[in-house]
Image (cartoon, rainbow, N blue to C red):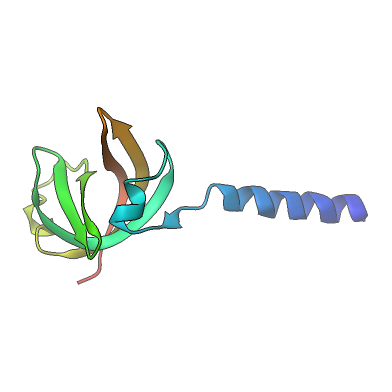
Length: 103
């Protein structure tokens, strides 16, 4: 019985390691590459083809949103994005897995 209990505790603990941490833009810029995060802010505009600017009270960061549809509707929307930090060429951006429009 103790073995089963310890296995359950170990599984629960290991799952939380991969949880996405809710962070601000300023915090996201300091995190290591490939860190799973969630950010909330407003999409203020397009940076280039698949990249947008996400702004919160602490700053702005480029987010990579791969979407084949016409996604101009995102600009001006408050969103919550989940993905991973990508630190290339001295810049930080978020490779987005999910976008949730809040309003």
